[in-house]
Amino acid sequence: MKRNLLDLDANGLAGFFEELGEKPFRARQVLKWVHQQGADDFAAMSDLAKGLREKLSGVARIHAPTIVGDTLASDGTRKWLMKVDAANAVEAVFIPEANRGTLCVSSQAGCVLDCAFCSTGKQGFNRNLSTGEIIGQLWLANRLVDSRISNVVMMGMGEPMLNLDNVIPALRLMLDDNAYGLSRRRVTVSTAGVIPGMDRLRDECPVALAISLHAPNDELRDKLVPVNRKYPLRELIAACNRYLEKAPRDFVTFEYVMLDGVNDSVEHARELAAIARKVRCKYNLIPFNPFPNSEFRRSDPERIRRFADVLNRAGLTVTTRKTRGDDIAAACGQLAGDVADRTRRSARRIPLKEVRA
Image (cartoon, rainbow, N blue to C red; front, side):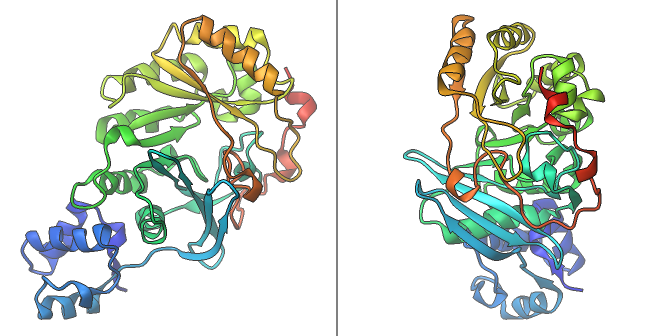
């Protein structure tokens, strides 16, 4: 079977060319053609010898996910449904802004973590995405949007820390000056708090880190973010502090979805302020984005404002995320592709009455 070159970072590509008996600099040439020029045809790689182009055509391919849906929101947000195999499709979202363009990419087909308020979690989990399927989302988006993609956030479908064998090579391609050349500060990986993965990412490819926090204490977080039962807040905060030793930013971002009557009281905000005394952080408040059959409601804007005010008065950096793309279900927590669920989790979901604090 032909080798998909999207699966290979610089080291992997150099090894592949060594196997072919070719000089290492050929790998750098092909890396630039594939990721900077968006080439998918070896015949177009004009600075390669004709014999090498023919050899590559026989043993390699450049294969990204197949776009089966392309939706544009009223605010310019664009969402793609990308088929990764016969049974599974994932979603990626491009968010254009005045001074940057952000691409949100997926790392798994579905998600195994089953956070109570997330549409992806409701549809279950099938498998990890390959490196080529992850970087292929950026490769495709670069070909399809006019503006430059300056930021990548791994906040789409899936838990990246449970797929680091494929996520790390994809991150290295994003950072490679011969590929996408993004700054470590402009590539963000989000996790619900899988601590072994955080420690590995810190050691192998530290980029900006976001934590899906969503609750200020273990009792509530156990219900909203079930992985907290394995990795409670005390251990998560310690892992964040370890990560900051090598991180490109001097803070972690705590993502906090605002759920009406669940986690949005003034007392909850005070508990968050106490967490900030233990780790350098900023808070990103996310108005809940509804999806079909959701059990939650978005917090009232005035309630969110009061919540943010408590954090501001404590001297913390707080932003409230502007909802983008919600009219095409492209906003945070709404992504749900087409996943052949292997978990059969719908019958095990926690009722809302057991989640409210």
